[in-house]
Image (cartoon, rainbow, N blue to C red):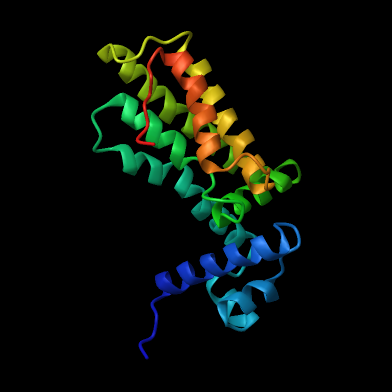
Length: 202
């Protein structure tokens, strides 16, 4: 068995902390919970992360990458603004009620009003998501693909708000709102806001 490097071990601990947060909650997770998930002693965890709070922040930050960095990467090679908008909407929603990244995000939201660092993480994510949508909308308008109903920042903020609202309904197991239904509901607003049919493949 090969010995893992320090960087790899920290990545393993971040993943373990991610699982521990989902199981015990952001404010209920303890060092021993993370150690158990990682299959290590508490001392071994502290060797890499002397402060549990630092590990929890890294775990939350890692979980948030999906909602900006990975989405940006996914659309980077696309030319059609309409396609970019559809893919961005879809990729911001939970895959299902047990989506671990979204459950982690919900945990972060629940603790943000008591933790300034968690609040900053969420605020930064929100601003970056708005900027992502705004860039797509403004590019589409410049190309003549979209005719925007109002300022791009307003549409972008509404799209992020709809993501958050429908994402919560999905994780709350609403009986008639799943990922496909939520995507269509958000796109229906986007069609009105962009004056574009935004046709999907299904």
